[in-house]
Image 1 (tube, rainbow, N blue to C red):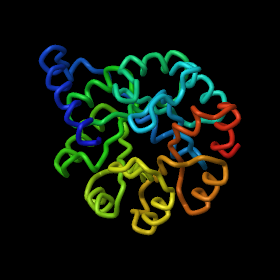
Image 2 (cartoon, rainbow, N blue to C red; image 1 turned 90 degrees about the vertical axis):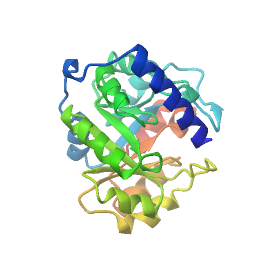
Image 3 (cartoon, rainbow, N blue to C red; image 1 turned 45 degrees about the vertical axis):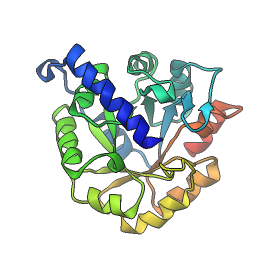
Image 4 (tube, rainbow, N blue to C red; image 1 turned 45 degrees about the horizontal axis):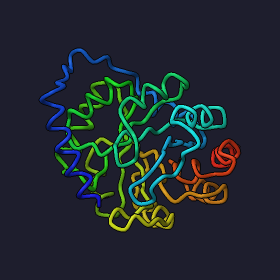
Length: 251
């Protein structure tokens, strides 16, 4: 499934580069809002405005992306993640919709495989981007990190395995996400974070991603030395989204 998604995005980006070229010189930089927010907080919740997923289908049909953003902002989120890829029912315009209702830093979550998407993210108003080590070469990781830095954008670099973690140690990454989702089976287990923690660079700000379902999960991760979590599915599927957000924020 991952390979199919990435292949489709490569085709889309190739078309966009021809039909909607972007001039980097015309793009206004920002000021590393995500890392500043994360570094200032004892515990971080990056709440994801997520409507669907390829593996689970529709996750939330009772709220819009902007409605979710408003709830998360009012109930302890440190930052917001906005999925902009079609398989997740996301679109680039969702960044502006979220910015209209929230002052929190916005992470563009997508399958970034081309420098064009870095420009695109900043032009749309994102403060940060997700870089997935599993789909990028070392050269691409370093290039996209450098480009994002030039525009004052943070990068949350995502790893799933020890081999990916070791690769990221050779980059300038300082915000690192440990994804608990197996990208081949799409199953989740937060034990993945605990197993990789001893191998992490102490300079990293660490975020555990996927499979975090309750306050107890968040508390265990914090006690283990993780600095925060990125949560989408369990938030948007909660019977009381506001209360669940507050719980995961450890308020």
